[in-house]
Picture 1: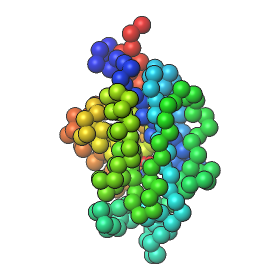
Picture 2: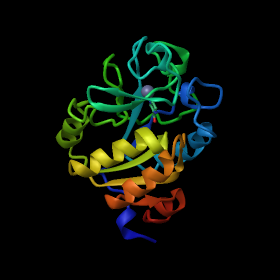
Picture 3: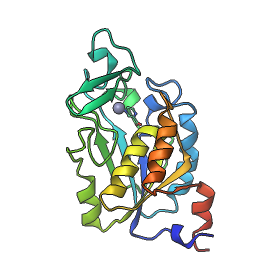
Picture 4: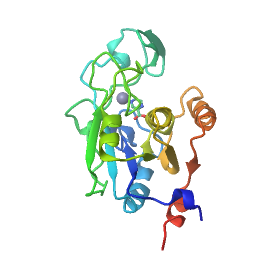
Length: 217
Ligand code: VGL
Ligand code: ZN
């Protein structure tokens, strides 16, 4: 029983990128990515406020290896905002792969926010694009609606969940990661790096069971 995990009306669950392309069979499949769907549907019922994010790239996006002749997915290049890992083409606007998994069953979700739609900037975080400067508008939305603490679940733990939780925490929204409602890509040590970086910021990793146990009967 952890009183601090008790969910209030000022808490929001942010469901990150549960899309076909991030699940087995998709273009950038996260191993066992589809396993997050049932637990997310379950945990979402405990939250009055839920926001869903959607990776949403134009064709020819800068993060696609195919946009850089001779480059392959998982290689890193230098771009104007620093290092960028290259990915297979994924979550292209309007394609089946970019759709949210239809098994997601969260009818009370209040907002679906898209990111990564600027052709020349990638966006892992749902608060700022990878230049760390271009906002998505989510911080303003949360503030205006009085939402203060963000619980994160979804894909991928070592990219969009990680950067979203880190930005949330840095800009004044306490963040909590529901670890067993996430799955990781784990490329070039990214999962270890995520654990190091997240614990340095003091963002807690919790389990679905802990969150459920903390709710008042
Ligand atoms: C993601 C890599 C590229 C994610 C999105 O949702 O974690 N990862 N685009
Ligand atoms: Zn992407």
